[in-house]
Structures are given as C-alpha cells and as structure tokens.
Length: 344
DNA sequence: CTTTTGCTGAAATCACATAC
DNA sequence: GTATGTGATTTCAGCAAAAG
Image 1 (spheres, rainbow, N blue to C red):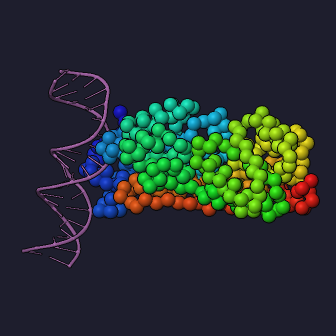
Image 2: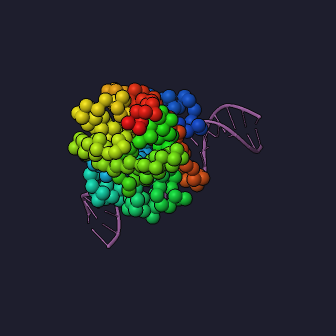
Image 3: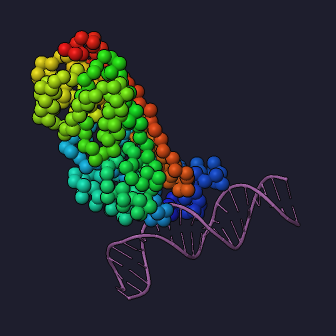
C-alpha cells in the first residue's frame, strides 16, 4: 500500500488537513510544524496521489499541445523543438506537465483533442498552428475550453487569444532586404496556403515587390521533399528572367533547395541568394550559412504558455494577443548584386 | 477578559469501479 | 440498482494557548 496523507498525519501527530496545508505551503501553518511534517514525508517516502488530487480539484495541472497534421517532417521541422522548449520552460516553472497529440491524420488529432477536452485530461491547450475551417478550433470554441493559439486565427479572431509574429511585415522586410541588395527577380517558395502563416508571408512578399514597383512575382507552392526541391530549382533555371534570389517560408525547404542548387552547381550566394524563415542550428551550420528571419520560436512558445497559464489562473482576464518581433540574421547565403548582373 | 493564532477533526466532495 | 471505497482537498465549527 502506498503512503497516504493519513499515514503522514498519524506519524507526525497532526490532522490530515494540516498535512494538506503543509503540502500547499499554507501561510497559517508554522515553520516548525511544516518542517516536522516534511521530515515525516521524507521518512515515509510520501508522494501526493495525483489521481486523487485531480479528482477533488478538477484540474490535472497538464497542458495539451496540438500539433498540426504531420507531414512526415513535422517533427523534424526545427520550429517544433524550439517552440516546445519555450513552452516547457514556462510550464515547468509553473508546475504543469505536457500532453501532446500524437496522431498523424486530421481525424486522429481531432479525436485526441475530444478526449482531452471531454475527458478533462488537460486544463488548457496550445495550438501550434492556424488553419482555415479547422474543426479543432471550432470544438474548443464551442466547448469554451481555455486555449491559446500560436499563429493568427483565420476566423473568430475576436474570441481567440493568440501569439504570433507579424508575418506580413517579416516577409516584407526580408524581401525588401533582398531588393535593397540589388535583386529584382526574387522567387518565393511558400507552403500550404490553408495555413494562415503561409498566407501572411506570401502577402508580405507581394507587398514588398509592389512597393518597389517590381511587376514580376514568382510564386511557388511546394511540399518539402528532395524531389520537389529539384523540380522547383529546375523550373527556376528555365525562367526568363531567371531569379537571383529565393525567399522560403520553411527552413527544411530552404535546406532542400540549397541541396538542389548544389546538385545543379549553382553557386550560393554568387549566382543565387537564398533566405528562409526560422533560425535554427540548420541555418547556422548549412553551407553556406543561411541568412534568415529569426521568428524567435522559443519566445512564441514561452509567451503562448504564459498567456495560457495566466488565463487558467484568472479565467476572467482580458483577451490578450502578443506579437513577437522578428529579426533578420545576416549570414553568407545572400549577396549584393550589381545592376548589370541583375539584368543579365 | 477578549481576540488572534494555529491548529483539530469530522464531513462533503470529486468520478468511477466494483461489490453487494 | 444502490452502496461503498479510493486519497486529497476544502470547509467549518470549535478548541487551547498565547497575545493584547
């Protein structure tokens, strides 16, 4: 039999309620009593029964994390571990544990979320994505379940607390950076436009071109794979005028494009500049090292978790959204070009 | 003598399985 | 079909001792 609060109480010659208050560090218990009880807990190897606690408090001290439907790469995408680190950093401080969806399909994930919500296995959720017509979002809103989104909601924006970058501005900035480096023909390789983040960045790219009076936009939407990257690059090489710079939305995409450029013996950055969002070790260690838009994924995760915990502690709190600033990290993958080269 | 402090100890409560 | 047991928490009336 496991040691219970009553065993501790008996041994320490106090009431069970006193032991409970010691655990909670209640201010009305003297330091002396606390020390005595804690010593007994040590001796007996007592640990609170979390199931029992959950039963009475109606809280699991657990946060659910909803990943987007995984392409096979979703766990290798450096965004995920970086954001997870930020979330677990704060959640650990606040003594919450983490429960993550593990499903591969939309249906699996939806079912897992239903289980978490209806089964009350988590107190709140963090969504790691924002997608059009998302049944998961609909469910959370209908059930009035506490959650925070990383990304900007496409609908019900007044009812959702979210943490995001200004992706439109970030994409505009990085495109503008290339324009000011002399590039006139800038290709953009985006992701699935059902996700808000991809829409925003695409829009930012277009805005920058428009502001610079550049007519030709070269837009690609590809999945992340070696094959798709090869296709993209060979399509680009056939274009006239040929792009001298690439903006990508996804770090893994950037790496696969870099690899495809290498295969085609296109020199980076001399013949082709390339830049991406997200800034992990991959960008730092690639060859050449990659100029990136650092979206501060750690901070996105951290702020999302912080907002959620605040909300759980104070359910009536005012709706709050956070924009995490982005910054351009300059490395060797982009180069200035002269007017002549740009035309030729 | 009254108030405050620091506790007591019983009871209600939670969701659910199993026993009666 | 109802009663019971699980373990921790919270509440509440109440008590003894210390403080005012």
